[in-house]
Length: 72
Image 1 (tube, rainbow, N blue to C red):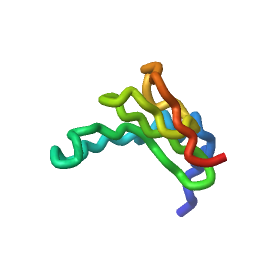
Image 2 (image 1 turned 90 degrees about the vertical axis):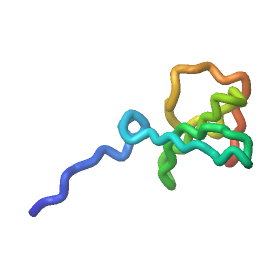
Image 3 (image 1 turned 180 degrees about the vertical axis):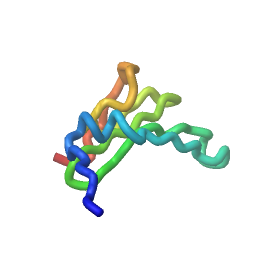
Image 4 (image 1 turned 45 degrees about the horizontal axis):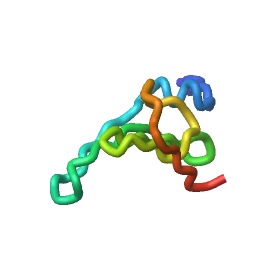
């Protein structure tokens, strides 16, 4: 059995497996949409706040009002 090659690029990563998670109502009923992979790319969008955390890959077609970088 041979391993299947998976391209490690951000374009491939973010076009596959974008996840969505709803916060509990006690925390504000926000939605977190995005993908993160260590040493490759992170991008998390919160539509209710219209913000993007990091921008390592495309996870939404929206144009957020603010982008916050958590690291360089």
